[in-house]
Image (cartoon, rainbow, N blue to C red; front, side):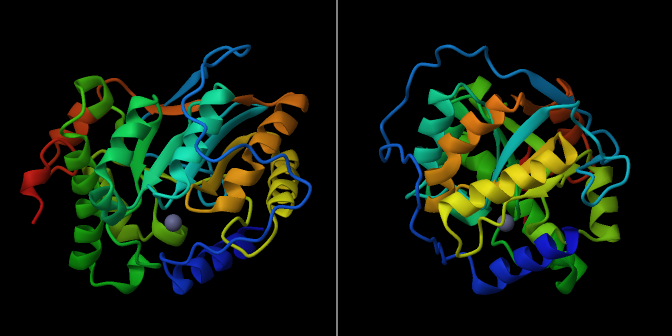
Length: 288
Ligand SMILES: [Zn+2]
C-alpha cells in the first residue's frame, strides 16, 4: 500500500499541479456546487487531537514507526495541494454541512494567488499546514538550500495571506509540514525539527490523484481505513471527484462507527516555531 501510494503521489507530481483530472462520478449523491456555508446541526463539534511539534515530531504510521496520533475509530481528514478556486469552497461547504473540521496542507503559490481562499479556510475553523511553495515532487532532488527555501516560502505565503485575517484565524496556521509526494529527507527533517515544525504524513490515502471515479475513490478510502481502523487520511481539495464523493464517504464512515477529529498544534507551538533560529512561522519577512 505504501509503495503504491508513494509511487502514485510521485506520478501525480510528475503530471504537474495544473492537472486536475477527474472521472465522472458514478452512483454518487453529488451535493450542489458551492451551496454556501451551512449550519452544523445534529453532530457535536469535531474533537481536537493535539499534536506536539517540539523537536520536529513526525506523524503518520505509513512512514513513521511510532507516529500514531489517533485513537481507535478516529479519522482526521486532510486536504492537500490547494487552495483551489474550483473545488476548495465546495469541500468547505460539505465539511460545514457535516460538522467536520479538517486540516488543509496548502501550496504557497496557490495561497499567494488566492489569499481570500486561505482566509476562508481559516475562518471556517480548519487547521492549516503547508506543503511547500511550488510542490516540487521530490525535495530530495533539489539542492538542500533550495529545498529549505521551498519549505520556507510555503509557510511565508500562507502566513502573508492570513496577515489580513483576525488573530484567531491567523492562529489556524499550524507548524505542520507535509512533504510533497511524502518524499521526506533526513537533512530536511532535522532542519524542520530545529524549528519545531512537525512533519505530518498519513495512515492512508484514497488514490484521488488518479483518474478513477468518485465511487472508486470512496471505495478505496473505506477499504484502507477499515484495514487500520484509525488514522490520518490524505485527500486533495483540488479534485472535483473528491468533493463529489466526500459527503457519501463521511456518511459511510459515521455509519461504521468512526469519529472525525481535527489535528491541532499545542497552544505554545506557534511561539516555539517563531522563536526558532531562522523561524518558519511568525516572521515571514526573514525568508529570502
Ligand atoms: Zn501534494
